[in-house]
Amino acid sequence: MIKRAVYPGSFDPVTLGHIDIIERSAEIVDELVIGVLPNKGKNPLFSVQERVKMLQTVTRDLPNVTVESFDGLLVDFLRVKDAEFVIRGLRAITDFEYELQMAQTNKIMAPNTDTIFLATGLEYAYLSSTTVKEVASYGGDISKFVPDFVAEAVYTKYR
Ligand code: PNS
Image 1 (spheres, rainbow, N blue to C red):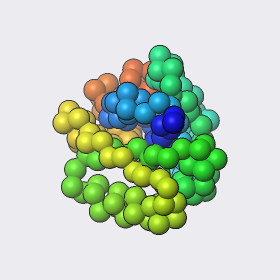
Image 2 (cartoon, rainbow, N blue to C red; image 1 turned 120 degrees about the vertical axis):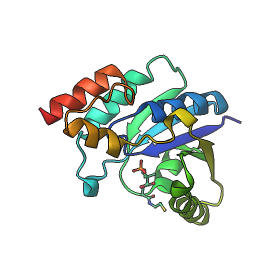
Image 3 (cartoon, rainbow, N blue to C red; image 1 turned 60 degrees about the horizontal axis):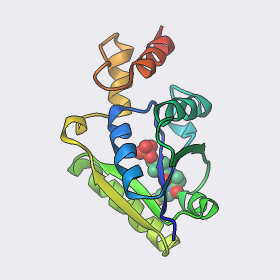
Image 4 (spheres, helix red, strand yellow; image 1 turned 180 degrees about the horizontal axis):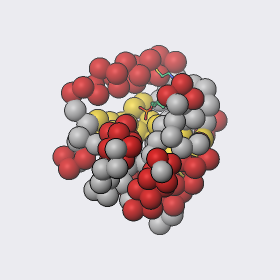
């Protein structure tokens, strides 16, 4: 049976930490769907279309990875995609409570699914899209946090 997973998130913007999780999970499952949530409430820097496009660019050499946006419940998107697994990265203990709560809620709503947590690489443990935006908004260097073309796109937004 094909093992299909969804890696959901806002990806506003995609960071090197996300890319690390994408590459590693693409080795574990047969097919990986990156599910981009519009997250209107969070007042995103990039439109959902821009975020999907950036993710398609960074995953163009990974043949078993596709990128789509979704709105609504993750468990509904899993059903539509016929996916059994959710991938999430865990950076630090501070992520744990929220992630466990999400995983357990999703498990109740969709008992035939499971969440797979990948420990974020130590070099990305500190990294988040929010801090990337914060640093860039003050003109700081984000070249160690995101791919070059993403950094350009972020600076353009703040220019
Ligand atoms: O990258 P993020 O913003 O931390 O990702 C959060 C995400 C998208 C995984 C989460 O908000 C989510 O799954 N949203 C979809 C709505 C949903 O299913 N909510 C119930 C989960 S308990």
